Amino acid sequence: MENEKSIKPLSGYGALLLFLVLGATCVYLGIQEYIAACVIVALIDLILLSGLIIINPNESKVLTLFGKYSGTVKADGFFWVNPFTVKRKVSLKANNLNGQQLKVNDKMGNPIEIAAVIVWQVNDTAKAVFSVENYVQYVNIQSEAAVRHLANTFAYDNMEDESAEVTLRDGADQVSEMLEKELNERLFRAGIQVLEARISHLAYAPEIANAMLQRQQASAIIAARKQIVEGAVGMVEMALARLSEKNIVEFDEERKAAMVSNLLVVLCGERAVSPVVNTGTLYH
Image 1: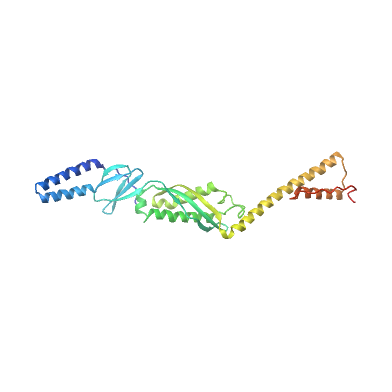
Image 2: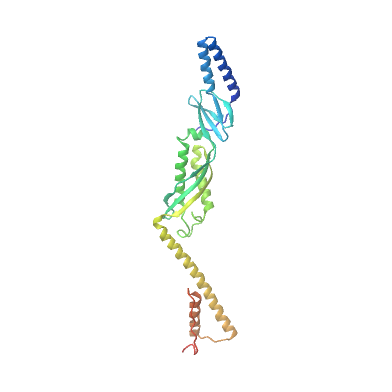
């Protein structure tokens, strides 16, 4: 596996000046009717011209000479290199990969839809050019594989796996960190560095979305009811204790049961209660 070798070639301005001088010489020889010499000088001039390269900011040129890696030019500017080298442009700018929505199963086997946004850039131009066939396509395929593996590793939420410390929905930071780490490991071969990776879309698949929504609503209702009942029991205990403390009324077990029943109905009911006034005793 080739490792990147950064080089800084000769300035292109001197080569450009030599090109102009040889061009003027060729014209002079042509006027003097030295045709053979003129043709030779013209060929040399054209070969010299093919060695001129321009490197823009955040770009590079990977050079190979007769099948052998010569080095990478990363410095921006105007340069001259060996005219016989093959020059391949590689961008060093950051790239955004907006992954498509994938339908996969989470750790508990539930079908979910997931997608990720990945920011990456070329870190080693030699590996990017020589270690893989097409580094852009390599990034796309490996990113999809990493997102699928991530979805299979964690449950969607704690409703499915109550013992899970990290879930896809609640552990956004941890999940993103693990995704970034796995992508860097997968893309190291291609000389790619992942700068950021985050989940951009996460949802249950349409075929189970309604069922899961009903389940979440039921869990919320149960949790609310549990809190209401706990509060109501506490209020009943307090009411009975205060009535006994103030000696307002003495309760036997039957009266206590009746009062507890009435208070729980009032406190736990969903609708407003219409009181019934009893002008007699508790038994009539």
